[in-house]
Length: 395
Image (cartoon, rainbow, N blue to C red; front, side):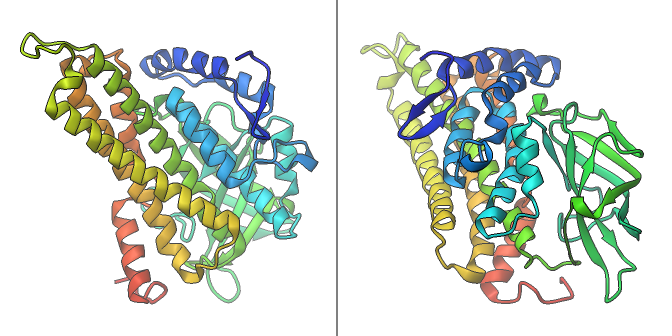
């Protein structure tokens, strides 16, 4: 395939030779703990940062289902690049979702994406295990906007983002505490990106901390103001329905690649104890490969069914909450299981630095740290099924 953007089944796709270049760089970026600047330049050049922007606004017109499929494919080549672009693309998708709902208040995000701006996510905070709905950061209402003060963690695209989607608590708001969802411009006074990222996996995402010291955000860049703990606002609904499947699909893509590596390795690997030749004829290896396939097949089906239902407007009502968290958890756990098995199939060679499976093994471990983690997922799903999701106190 050439380096030009091609149409396949009426959809724009990233060229395979571009993705192969990404794969060729991924190991070195991981080893040196370096951001994927070259990958980003290529993605920006072909307009992928605007993949979810409707075509009438200059984007590729991807639906959530299109983007999930594309990000899964990208993750098979460069997991960290896929994860970091997910953290940008979900904001673009939320803005596109608002347009579909007849609300143009986030159209500026679509324009920023077309212009090549990178948007990061600033929600993780020390001491807050319910991100988005609560916050340890402070929001103070002032003329024309809010002042934000606090520290954010895990901000993918740390070296390059232009906008940071962040939230903070206005504890003194009339009527009770409110959570303010704001978009912080990087050049605003009081913004400091702190280079903290030196991690087990997903190293090229460079998900640094950001310190906000009385940063002013104008009303025009406020996405939503909602009562603390209330996730019913459309902005917050979209913030669950776009990010979680896009995160989940990255880890499914990692598992798919692990299966490719494990099976190709088994077909090459030989033993003097196996008269027919390769390990492909070893019954235990056959069992392990089958286990991998079945884990991945179930994960793919879970993510795709969820996404198809959302795009089609299926009326799950309150069941959307347990479904979205269950979907993400199931996909990540299946991916971890599949990659674990792949490393067993590969044998000792898979644990050496420089082996792609060794890197995938570390990358896939990061899936459990994204919202919702294991504890929060089981809490939310259990409470939702029991019909006590919104009751207080929490326990």
